[in-house]
Length: 245
Image (cartoon, rainbow, N blue to C red; front, side):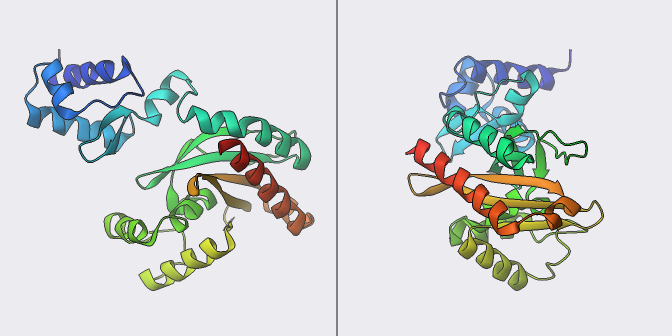
């Protein structure tokens, strides 16, 4: 038996007993008779991998999105899901394109719910994706308060490789994010895949809690009434916002 793996699983099981009730480091360590330093290191790894979520400094730990995805359990952010599901289904029925509801976690955008169009050619995206690589991720970064945005950039850096080739400097990134924030709209063209992504914010109590996106092949996007497509996306987001009040 590999001890550190055994301890990590013990921690996950202890958190999963009450998955939405935050448990402090002291509570978890003492409950398993673990050294606090050892427990903190294991939790740090589980948080980094998305299996555990730290609510805030000294506020405790709950199960992360990855733990729910392993079981197909959709209860993560259930209030958001309940508000969005019907409206997203209606949006996909209206525009016949795939839609995605996502949240920000560290430097990743995590899909909570998706709908699929009845098209022979569809765009698929992964459940977890680096934020710079997606319209939804870019939108979520742009909508962060300025202080959190600066902390994000300081911690995770600028886009690298092909993740966002238009961005060449921090000032360039901040200007682009400011434009996205003003317009409350992120557009992404993935040239090598001929894919378009569009994303708008979802609000709860005046704060952005998620993004609503449409992903489709570029050739279909070019043939559509783009203003109407964006209007439909915004209208669906507004209906979700009202359900979250």
